[in-house]
Image (cartoon, rainbow, N blue to C red; front, side, top):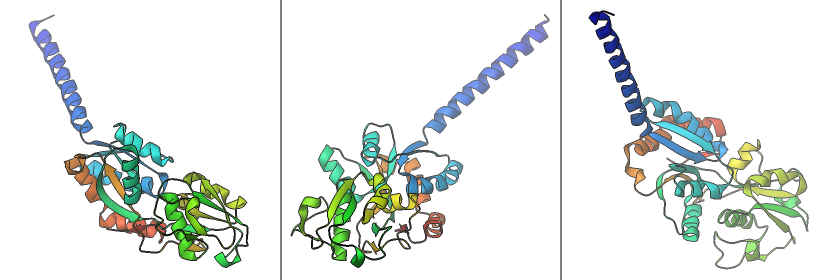
Length: 270
């Protein structure tokens, strides 16, 4: 082999090594801007998938993992299996932090999902007969929220001082002698055929093809404090990648997407 061919071969090898080194460096750099975010499917994952292309153009890869178990979402964030989650409200977060002795940070509030009462058997609350069965979500604050919705309709009255941590044991007056079934939130829509009515979180209602505006027989008052938030670990909220996520999820494009897709079933709050 001539010296020329040997030099050319050495140069090619060095060039290939340089390309591999650059590729490795690029991958490492890109990995620094990966956000692993957990969310319940509708509308949270829908909204996150909508903003993925925008964030990708800004150098942030959004990896969305869907969950149906609320507790697992915060556990995964605490264990650093996720970098953020998007499914909960501030009252739920505060209750979780106190219960489990952890602390998270709110990146931004995005939307409100009005909780509502649904029935496949009756067209109004007044039609629900005495002794009927009502299904409720059983998560902390979620059950208390559902009971407050029922209280606002006049079906029940809670004891004085009842809070968002209230359960069926806090019902002080039950004129129709209703029976309440506490179920995992995702399972409540599945119980509609077996009960007179059910109080359902909007995300699970939408997932089941129900519209809080069109299909409910009663809906949560608009004064609800249950705005859904993006949550991160303390200190991460100021990092550039998370600030890009905050800007993208509260953009005019997302507001239009929410309003057009969910038609009042999800309400943007930014």
